[in-house]
Structure formats: C-alpha cells, structure tokens
Image (tube, rainbow, N blue to C red):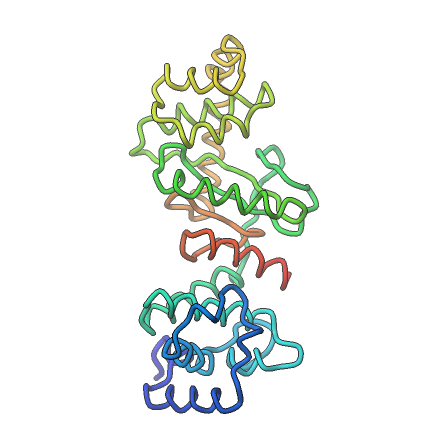
Length: 284
C-alpha cells in the first residue's frame, strides 16, 4: 500500500531525472505565480522543477504540476502550486513539509463540504455580491489575531472590488478580556464605528474597562451611549451566537479563516492567505 504522500514524492534518484528532463526542455518559469524566479539559486530551481514533476495538480488539469504548467494555456492551479513549491523550497522546507503543505492547500481549496456561515446580521465590509467572502473568527486578546490584523487589512483593501470581509466573535476562554473587548466592538456598531473600534482594539495595550472606554473615546464614540450598549444583554447573546456557530463549524483556535465557506488550513502569512483568496477568484 502506498503511503499518504507517495503521490507527491519520488525517490531522490527519480527527482534528479525529472529535473534533468525539465531542464532539457526548459522549465516555464515565466508562468510560475507568486515568486520571482531570479531570487532562487540554481540548486533551488532544480529542486522546484523536480518537485513540480512529482506533485499532482489537484484541480483542473490532470497530471503533474510541471505538465499542467506547460499546457496551453497554463493551468491556473498549476501556476499557483508551482509558486507555492518555489516559496517553500526558498524557505528551506523538507520534501515532507512541502507535501503536507500541498495537502493543506488542497484541503483548503476543495473541502468535502463548504461551511454554511450565517452572515445575515454579521459585521462585514466590501461588496455584498463580491466574488469571494473572507470570514474570520477572532478574539481581540489573541496575539495571533493581533499579528494577522495588519496584513488582513492589506489583503482586504487591495481587493476592495472582489472581496468581502466579515468578522465573527470567538472569545477564547483563557483570555480574560476577550469577552469585554468583543462586547465593546459590538457596542460600537450602534454608532456606526464597528470597523474603527475593531482596528483600534487590535492595537490597544489596555483592555480593562477603563481602557476600553479610552479606545471608545479615541474612535469618536459617545461614551454614555457606549456604556448603555455594552450593558445590553442582546449584545451578549450576539457574541455567544457567533462563538456557538464557530464551535459548530469546528473552529478550535483563533484566528480561523473561511474563504467562500472553505476553511483555510495554510500558513498564517499574508502571502499564503492572499494566494488562497486569489486562487478562489481564479477557479470559482
């Protein structure tokens, strides 16, 4: 029986042979998306070419990434997979790590069943008819959410015509100030300042009650109205509903992203999340 990653890997001797064959015909580096081939060494290029010859293209064209990249026209998935292989080789990943990453890309792009996320009253920005909807389940006290916030903003802003972004509350139990911060964000929506508060909370150093009021003041909220809204039980129900929905969808960490209902399992970096979104735009 073949092992899990045999479809994506060949023995080292065969990898060399594949690379030699690719090199003889000329690997189409100009078709590779997401990396400047000029930044790779000759040895790295040889390894990428070998991996492209042994990695199955998981959508569209049937065959290896190398075969589908050489087609006319080049397959969109193959172009992005080749770029992914190149980025991982440049990062020094092992063949096993790269194979696992390819498996996660496939799982992200083509799940057995996309999630049905309720966005009827969700806090979203971007066109309602956008080609791609990105949903984040997050926590304002989560350090990983805080680190991701800046690049998520860049991704959303640079795709304003094609991407809709929605944020769902998922306060982690171990974060003592996650619930109050989430309520503060929801309370700000009554004054039309949800996204301003959302951004400010991710950079706030103090999430105590007084600190949250300071953030509210900094984004121009009327403090009396803010205090009244925070105390409204309906906001607590809204926050709890978001978290329950996330749990039902299998969310077990923050941040968790869904791209058109497809859970993202890739690396939490700007390059890889943006690539997943752009892949969805191309193959939807």
